[in-house]
Amino acid sequence: MLSEVKPEEKNQFIKELQKDKKVVAMVGDGINDAAALASSHIGIALGGGVGAASEVSSIVLMHNHLSQVTFFPFWFS
Image (cartoon, rainbow, N blue to C red; front, side, top):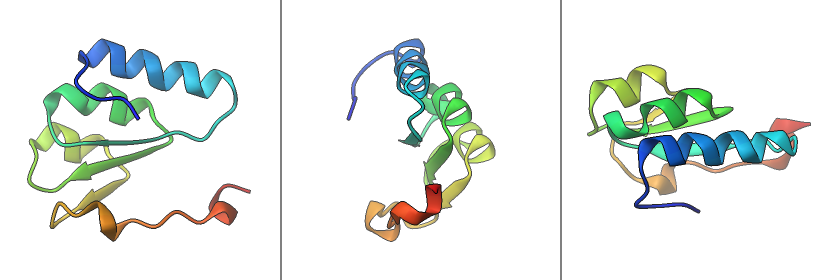
């Protein structure tokens, strides 16, 4: 988990994880998250956020509850 960092730091963190062939999910809610959401394998935007986050994400949570998402290991096999 990474929080309270600059947009370019978020994006760099995503890319570092992907170098190790890891599937990376990113959760964000605003314009500062858009680059990292776009570069992650699974971008999850909180629905109350700015349009840029929602536009580049794979998933948009309409009620801003992370509990709406459940990851199953077989999704990535």
